[in-house]
Image 1 (cartoon, helix red, strand yellow):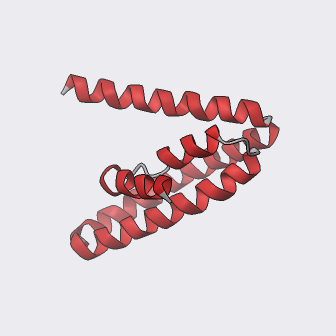
Image 2 (cartoon, one colour):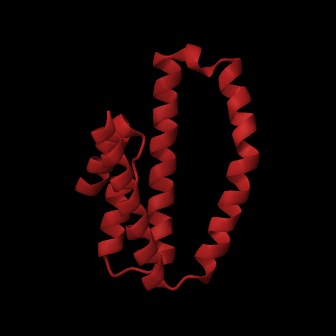
Length: 118
């Protein structure tokens, strides 16, 4: 529950809700399949709640420009997602955890660099 609370809090102000849950599941001795079964619904629910909040608080954001940009990005995102699923199926549990932590580390480094350059 505490990990979920932290993830919700972080997700509420960064739109990056999965960090705490990914780290927590990575530190557990559970297979990658169970990790995805925990992480994906968690992120989905928090993103839907965030979108609903944004629609309520900032309805003007969801005008024609939003839908055009969404339509433009979908053809790029979908092949990337399919590639990710393809790679996921070929990874062992250990390599899945390694890659997950490497990607989280790179994301953190990128955020730090961005913050320091401002």
